[in-house]
Length: 582
Image (tube, rainbow, N blue to C red; front, top):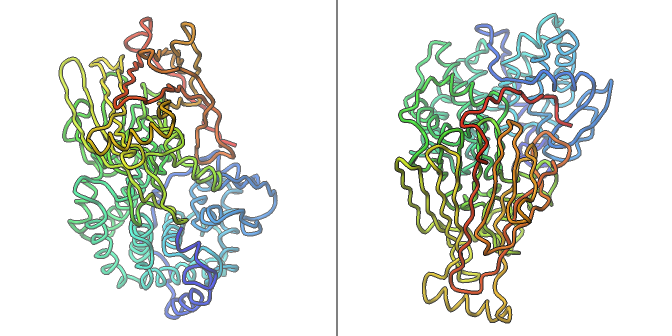
């Protein structure tokens, strides 16, 4: 979003530089058609298409009801809303609906965009949004051109040609990572599809391969450590590879190698319910996107996941039976990749079968600045946190990057016939309190029992001296901390055993029971589940263990286990309804 947030006079923000660049891109022959019929590969939602036709525009957490009006008649409430509009991802939903009304909306709204913004005005001319828009225009070309008159058809080809030339000259202005992949994939798509623009293909393919080589590391991860963003990169690389193959072009080895590296990483980051782990600004992924991308790549798993899986993009997966756990076991990203990083080191998520159990709150970006900051703080994650101080922190300026970042000190995994064990520690509070957080987790081989322990400890003389100073400042009362386990909103939780345990019921019928070693105060408190596509955060609950660190080592043990009467194999056949979440 960096380019969109630039001043209106800047490049890519609809200013005079953008209008000049678009004017130059419009000079030259216009493509008169496609070399072959484009194939739509992006997936939309039927229910969202119906909402759009009804005049309900739900983007970036904002719902604007405007029956009879088009999207360009709406004053965007924020930059994210405008970006979703100008990226044309909503075309997928109208195409999923696919009836005559949806087609008329798609055609008229596209033509209206061309009239209002096609000369370079408006916020949609960042290279990444232009690439995203070109991909959708190409995917749904038949949908947009079916029964259109010659004037509308000519305007479509003229605008698509202009955007393609614009991308060929300015794709490098997109930020590294996902924005640049979007810009280059759009350029490859249009160059391959449009008659007369074939000369743009080879440079774009080479640039995309170079980005794949430099931005996807050897372990199949990206710098932001955002699992959902990695899925988007993977999807774009797959789409580009398919388009090149269909057109009879050779896909560069660097491009194919990146796809092969990403596939096993995404499998590791996928919970038992098929959704991605929600870390560092990412959600669980669009419905069906991950399965489609993995099926398209046709890369089979090299080894089974579960016991002793190597870290993938800094995350450790532990799974057995119906249960999967994913733990953030690396430092938050910094630099240009850290703009959405969360203070989530050693946070975990737990899923049983198709049902999420323990989650992180998620990204608050769709709900405004305050929620965005709150979602990035340690208390919004299922881990230990010293009250009032996140494990990674912003600097003294007003930037969005975490400058004081927790670093992993130790990381060990063990597996046996009895199950898997994990130990890791980070130094997030070493400078502020002289304390290190260590987390131990163990999952039984049948997936029915999780044992955990969280420890705050001073490891060296410098840390002990700092902790003694902090302790003295509290009058010897100690450092207050909490261990949080945020529960998915579809669970039903109650305090049991006189307040010494929490029972958590899943929709599948499973019952999980949380207990602890009585060294902390157990409570069940309100929490939120931040989910893209909703108007407001979903209310849920969190299990909280509250204690005070008054010694150089404080250890709290806990367990989360299925109730004894829960069957080994449970038939979870009920499917959730999937209407547009309002």
